[in-house]
Image (cartoon, rainbow, N blue to C red; front, side, top):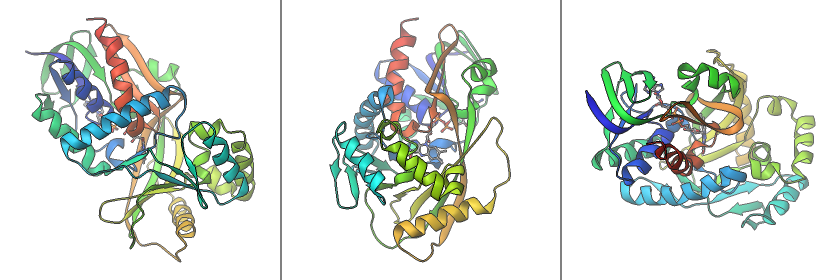
Length: 350
Ligand SMILES: Cc1cc2nc3c(=O)[nH]c(=O)nc-3n(C[C@H](O)[C@H](O)[C@H](O)COP(=O)(O)OP(=O)(O)OC[C@H]3O[C@@H](n4cnc5c(N)ncnc54)[C@H](O)[C@@H]3O)c2cc1C
């Protein structure tokens, strides 16, 4: 039977973040992924390192993660833009939120709203695969197309046999309830389903772009007193958009096309049907934001992430085993800062 220091279950950004930090601490690491390459939330997102708009421990993780992204970008050689984020203020109450944010974060107020200089963008379709390739070149073993069945202290059973290990991290995103239903229930973990589209675009829009709708979704905005006014106005003027959980935002991919979105729907089991009117809402609002009559859709997809009242799940289902999931839709922003904290705690048990 193979034996390693650490088995990581899941090759999304959370699993890779643990593998990256563990291998740098000198541990032998095996990553087990059920698909032949990662196809989960980590490749379906905006690729937005949304550091500035986080708060509390998420902000701490985010700022650590920012340094790690820059290091990984250099070492793995993937496309990464230190482009910042523009937050468009289209109403006085949104401008007031940004003025309040400027008193706690280093951002610049501009004619159109605010510029958040620290944020970054990666191409999620490339970054996660590049990180896996870098880790493989540093000695991490990847078992692709291998389903993990059970995780116990010292032993991981997979569809291709057993692996002995000193410790294990289960980083399976929203599927944490498949392994640990009681923990998932206790932490009120649900699946959040998001609608995403990629549309053609002619010009260059380097920063990520957020709007007043985004102010309802990120914690640093939530702390600003005027955000309540934004919420009340948007709920009154656009109840269908607030009901759909719209976070009107976009990021540009290297080929110039825009990833646009998104809407949020919460349930434990994801409904398979996709009402077309949600995409219509996103397309109409994005066209309005860009000041164009219509948009040409190139791709549509659905993303799912774990969601819970607490932003992060780190649980100990058994000795020397950790279940880790980012339960707030900010795994690209925070995972690389969360992982060292998890490992500090886990390695004390060895
Ligand atoms: C549409 C969308 C947009 C988003 N935008 C952003 C953004 O711009 N910025 C940001 O910070 N965050 C964003 N997020 C959130 C972010 O993408 C997630 O928080 C993050 O990707 C979660 O990473 P993960 O590794 O936990 O999950 P995943 O990427 O889903 O990876 C989990 C992996 O575990 C594997 N797995 C599951 N079960 C098993 C098993 N039994 N055996 C082996 N492998 C298994 C799966 O195959 C999968 O590859 C977005 C999410 C979505 C869905």
